[in-house]
Amino acid sequence: MRVRRSNAPLSLVVGGHPRNVGDRELALGLVAGAPWAIAETWRRFAPMVLVTAERSLGSRSEAEDISQEVFCRVFRKVKTLREPDSLRSFIYSFAVRVLKAELRRRKVRGWFPFLQPGTPFEPDFRTVNVEARDFLKKLYALLDRLTPRDRLVFVLRRMESMTVEEIAATMDISTSTVKRSMAHASTRLSGWIAADPGLAGLMRTECWEG
Picture 1 (cartoon, rainbow, N blue to C red):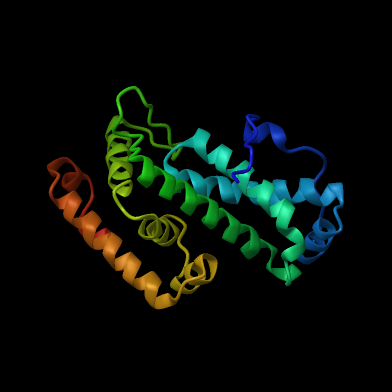
Picture 2: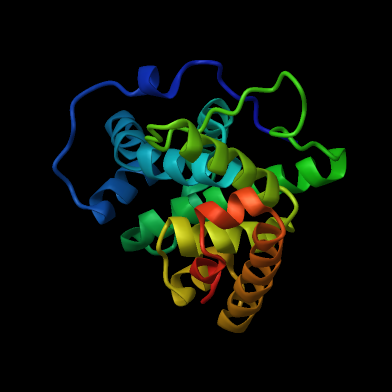
């Protein structure tokens, strides 16, 4: 069953005052159901989840929905956290699972949001010119053609700058699987970019290697 998503903008959900506590103390507060811990967890980690979701999906509004769904699940399942010091990784793992499920739904529906007429492209990546925005639009159309796993590996490696080991731990897959997915995504993206004169002119295909 999918968690009901709030329609409240992400920026309006955060309240209260920041707490100067470590992740371990914060995790223990969450497990105990302390209201301050819930607010502090959202304040501390929601920006991280929001950025990852936006870079994965290419949509600010969808990223906000996904972020709220992630934290609904985190708060419901926090008592399963066995290592309080690993709160950040615990939250990131939920983000990856929710994003992977969302990307799979897109595949099943055959839904390509940046190719459908009337659907706005809305990433907030500080693009300042038409050429850069056009490149991002085309890039995300290509990312939609990857499998959910290959797409997430690519985003976490190239956009989030995570190591192969960090991706493997976050996605609960082997490092060899991460390397294969990255190689597969890089090869396909390089081929698609090379076949598009406009994209090839904006980005050298070598940047997708590794």
